[in-house]
Image (cartoon, rainbow, N blue to C red; front, side, top):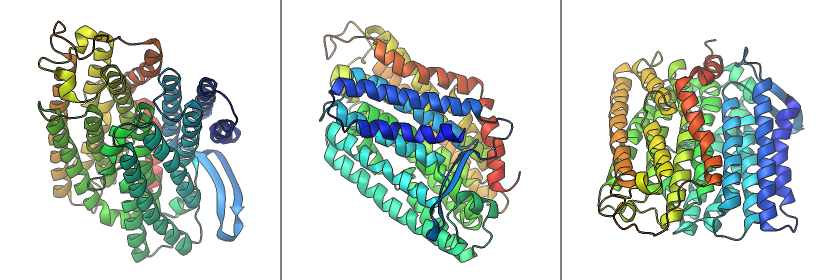
Length: 508
């Protein structure tokens, strides 16, 4: 299985290198689908060969010396925390490649687009597979350049300004995070994440843990993104092409929260416990803030952009992930990890559908789409309307769909936080999160009413509004199906994450 994991990382990199050859755009796009499809098959094989009886144990391990002088090792492996994220990353990248074959955004061409997409996939997969702090940092940085060019070259609107803001924020966050990693490596004598996690802070003084935890927390909070370090996200999503938005929301945001669970909690536990109440407070504010921003964008006359609205909704949803992490309990952390996967599935579907609506209407402006009576997608494009409504009710946390379990467990973790944390404070955060769920339902139902309902007999902004196409159904149906499966069978993910979470926390 370690060969499978290595191949999983190498295959998209080889595909990206192949895009340097002088081949046609359509052939490049088809090759991109082939490479991402083969990568997805390897991820499924990795999941099938995974020992589900021991999800807390690192499996498919490769551990060889890379820079002996610094004790930096090429250390790879997966456990019950990283495995679902690897499969999600491979799935979303493949679906984006399938979608782009028929709907390549305007830009330099298909060969460059595919090469950047495959390089982006390499970095995303490596982030969830590496077990060395230096390699983790390098994998984290690999994704920034291809995403920057996807936004600045294939985006729309203020794409260059949005891409510049994205790279500025994330690079500054990376620099701060690296300082924390270097401090840990120097003081502990190793960058190996498994050894550091097993030590659970031993050998690191309280002061060292406080400084390192603050640096890592700030760096990863930019990438999560946590309020108030989120302001790069709405611009990036609004300008990005559909595939860029899907991967930005579905995977890149998860890299930040994954780092909090994989690095911050087990390696500097004392520092993490000190800052947990503040993280919980920022998470609760982010939940309410994101929901209020979406309500403001959804109201009539606000000229709200649907992609921008979904971006702000991500700030709120990732707030639930951060709240679960801040509780420092197995329940909260399981909820956070479940919410990570659910958000990737649901928001990926939302960005696909909204991207298709924007392509058909030529705009994502909600007032232009809705007009005086509503866009009436139920009557004009019923399958697209049904998928948009499905994704919306999944995003608001309807029981039976994936969005429900993560938010519920995160709030339950806040209700009974870990020993040493202020229960009244976390109960207050839970109440604010509960208010956020109500506000989320409000703005998403407003969006469904304005976009899906209305009088189809009224003149439409465009004469030709085709319903769901074959390539769209192929790209979107797996996300809708998995959203339903995860909602009805939460043990599929919780059975993997729970033992691994308890192991990281040192309680099992």
